[in-house]
Length: 171
Figure: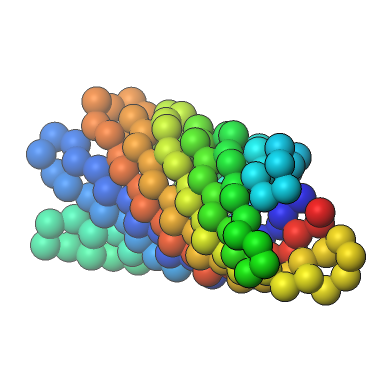
């Protein structure tokens, strides 16, 4: 079990009817992985990952505005694999995820899907320090990439997210 949370940056872009749009901002990055060791250093797991951008900036050609009281979210889940380098307790992991971008109106607590479910990947590099027999605390960098179809459009949205995370791992 690995729980991770930290600061994230999310950027999405799409183009419909010849108009390009980019939405980006800073928010929270989170990752939850639950799995089992295949060998001493090799773990397979299921992952749930999310990155948000609070009050993101929306860029159109020649125009930029802040979407106040709004959060943009990249959510994903899927299978993954991790490999630990002993004795450094440095790990590398990757997951193939099913992803979707949503937007929340923070004033009304309403949520809407901007995209259909798409495909993505998440990649982590981390370092842990054992604090007890079964618990490790650490830091990690997470990169997420995704491509999804924009709802009610033929356009595709691409998303890139990067997070610096603090982690707690139970082994």
